Amino acid sequence: MHALTAALPLGSFALKQGTQMIKSELVQKLAEQNPHLFQRDIERIVATIFGEIAKALAHGDRVELRGFGAFSVKSRPARTGRNPRTGESVHVGAKHVPFFKTGKELRDRLNVEEK
Image 1: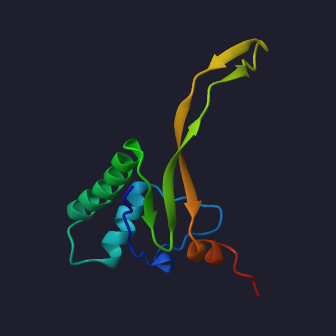
Image 2 (image 1 turned 90 degrees about the horizontal axis):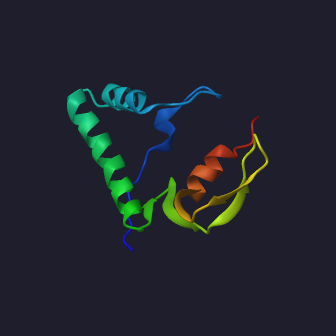
């Protein structure tokens, strides 16, 4: 397995607590921080990065972004589930699911003691 690594300036995307960031907002923030780049180029860069992560995961590879975390694929075995409406037993097939494990630097930033 190969790892895609990059150093991310984690402090540059501060959001208010309880908010979320969608891809277009990420592109906008990057455009604001890099006025020398065209927005269409930034959109292409972001789409390429996400596409490469998805492609690597589809091949079963692990993707590591140093200081941020690692994406990998976990296998879930087949099981018997329940239909919540009827209570009837239902067969759920085996599947692969994406998994994200935060990096130490990101975990440390999330768990800073407030003063």
